[in-house]
Image 1 (cartoon, rainbow, N blue to C red):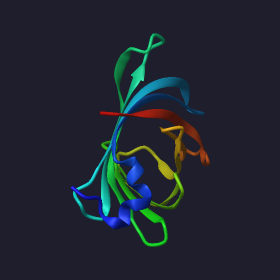
Image 2: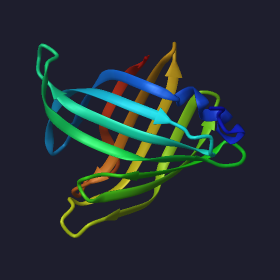
Image 3: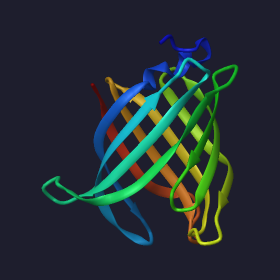
Image 4: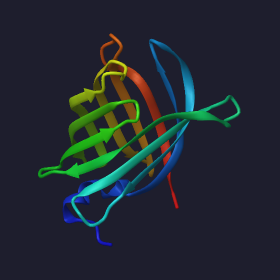
Length: 159
């Protein structure tokens, strides 16, 4: 299926990516995680997105599932981007940002959470294609802390 012309500037994301990264936050201990991300399309001007992470032990073995998120990356004119994400923890985010070559920078425009979700107020994400790998970093503002580095990873395209 042909990629919608509006997706040209983010078409490099399409496919399945796997890799690992590191995480931490002032309220938790640092950790290593594995990750799988998939970007798919159906010919319309958006990408469907799913990310799954799991805790890794010191030997790199899977310990238990961590975060899951799913949503849509919506291409906009002039290399602008809107991203809508939902989390099973009761949080929904809308990010806005832009694409410059193979670098994507996103900031939350709206964060909504259920009554039982932990406090989370803002996010900032960077994605970039570096030597064929998808590198990313995520800062979050949560549980009384301002935007602080939370997770980063490096993924290789598979399949």
